[in-house]
Every structure is written in C-alpha cells, then in structure tokens.
Image 1 (tube, rainbow, N blue to C red):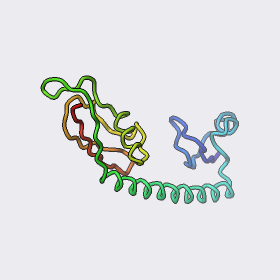
Image 2 (image 1 turned 180 degrees about the vertical axis):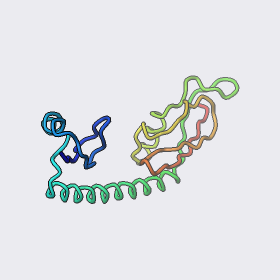
Image 3 (image 1 turned 120 degrees about the horizontal axis):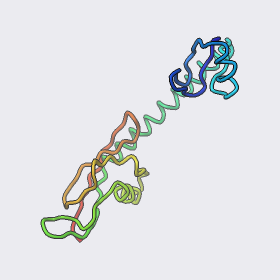
Length: 147
C-alpha cells in the first residue's frame, strides 16, 4: 500500500514522504491515527501544491529573519550590574536579561534565540550571536558596565 505521511513517524519517515508499507500496517495503524493518507493521484498533486506553499512561506520567513539580523547588527545594549573586585559581577547576565534589553530597544527577540554558552560574569564588551532562523544568525554588542 502506498501512503503519504502527514506527520513524522519514528523509524518510518518524515512528513510528506511517499512510502510503500504493508497493507495491515497502513490500514490498521497509519490511516486510523491520521498519520498518513493513501497515495492517490489527487493526494499526490495536493502534496506537491502544499510543498510549494511551504517553500514560499519558508523563504519569506528567511528574508524577514535577514532583515532582523541587519537591524540587530546596529544595536548596542548596555546592561548595568553591581560588581566587586576584579570586575566580577554579583550575579550574572543571562540570555533573558539580554532579550529584555533588546526588546526594550524595540526589536523583537526571544530569549531562546540568544546563544550564550554560559552566563556573563565579568564586566566588558561582548558580541553575542542571536539565532533568528536556522539559516540566519545575527550579532548583538552587549556592554556590561559597573553600577
């Protein structure tokens, strides 16, 4: 039986794959759980149409992410923290802190986009990568200064 997967199925395939499976597996497991549909000519043409729509949508998201990355390149944030001897901070600067400051500048950035290897614990200037899209990475300059 030929089927088109509607969702990712472990050990079988990814969404949109056209596969040949055993009749019982398709009829008793995949079809009732809406994990797949039969691969008729109508369903195959519909799948091709959906793939083109998805591709156009992904291209648009990528272009928007590139524009955001260009805006981020011009952003320089200042975070004020209390510090002790040797410019060591009391506490640390985390991805959440950086995202809040950038959002305050009027640029929408989510906390999970900020790629900090570990929290910042010293005063200084840091260039922080921001993963906006799987293919687009922007940079933010962060100044951590003494209160």
